Amino acid sequence: MTHTLTVSDEQSGLRLDKFLSTALPEISRARFQSLIEEGAVSRDAQPMQNTSYKVKHGEVFTLVIPDIKPLDLTPSDIALDIVYEDDDIIVLNKPAGMTVHPAAGTQTDTLVHALLAHCGDSLSGIGGVARPGIVHRIDKDTSGLLAVAKHDAAHQHLSAQLKEREMKRTYIAFVWGALNPREGTIDAPIARHRRYRQQMAIVEGGRESVTHYTTEALYRCPGSITPLATKVICELDTGRTHQIRVHMLHAKCPILGDPTYGPTTTTRLNRLKSGGTQVPAAVTDVLTLLHRQALHATELRLTHPKTGEFMEFTCPLPDDLLALETALTSLTN
Image (cartoon, rainbow, N blue to C red; front, side, top):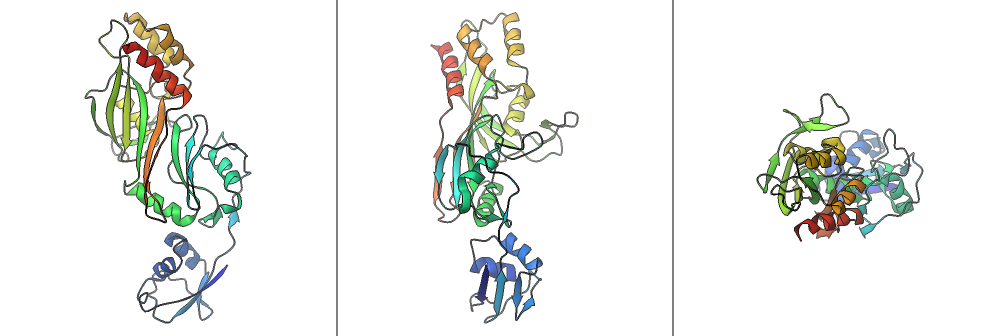
């Protein structure tokens, strides 16, 4: 696609990349910088490869945008739970068990494969490639809300909101024991575990990681003073890999069903039993059947990248975590 763009008096003095992004706001400035460097922008038939060139009133630039390259993945026709969709973004409820991005060991049937099938020809290029723009990730075995950009400008806008901590994400977690204090902030840097490279850990010098938490409910077994488990509301300031899981372990309250960052359910139940705590069979059964971390992204707040509208989305607990909550709540009745 070819565009002929003339510099107005108001645009005079802008950097070339800024002028282009002002003229065509649906394309990100970063994408224009790449196009300039690739020789796709010319003036008087001469390529303009200096992104910082200051444009002048009356100058005419020709921009040739190459065809969007297809992503080298085969779309998968997988049903998606779409919470909201328009021409710019998709907000969806990701089920536990679905991987977001293709990676070693998971090359098919990821969320990206499903989005490619769902969007079809409506998907615009992100960085020159036809692909859905995953703005933030959710672990494979975590469920809940996820925002996806359909084109480059929306992706850049949402990513900036995330970076500036303007996009708010709230999670429900069910953890072992009780947090002390009952509400507060965990500000502990996270990096790759130095020994177990598939795991993250609290590491001095790691990336800043901030989780605000509030206790919503305590669950005690009959005759026990110490809570068996707690329902916790967590809000993220940052979005590091496994952040809530690592921070809850750091607080000595690992998430139920998460053997990566805590003891297995069987080990925990055996310890409770040996210590004299009698966990009712109804609760034991639900805990044993829980084959993933009890973590759900329940709320997402963002500003729409095109309209500027503030948007708030909520998503109730899925069936497995609802069954868990029901069983734990029975302890207090």
